[in-house]
Length: 149
Image (cartoon, rainbow, N blue to C red; front, side):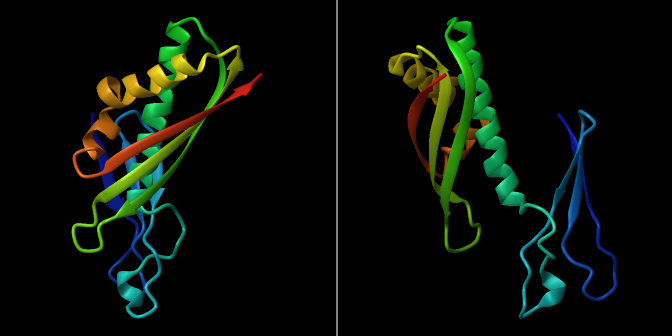
């Protein structure tokens, strides 16, 4: 896996802190920093997600992918899956994630709560590289609800 991240700014004043990531699979992702009123040269322009937001989003994508795949492999009639992530970060540098809560909403026909719970657990204990990695610094909790299709 590879990725090239390039700064979109220039050497001029107020050039911002935007970056473009070009992934090895040929996709492009924009990132930007938060504006800094006190030091405009150090801040972004709020034109794209923050880099740490993309880490959180990637983790959500990783675990949702697993949950859907595990349920499908178990021949469950899953028709939708979303995960809402909330997090807390350390107050001092490095500002790693210290708490992450993931709330899954899984839509399907006749889904058993035990099957959804098992799929989420397998993702976090065995398959989701991102959440397992973030679990080294953050307490990760989960919850779910099932919506009948």
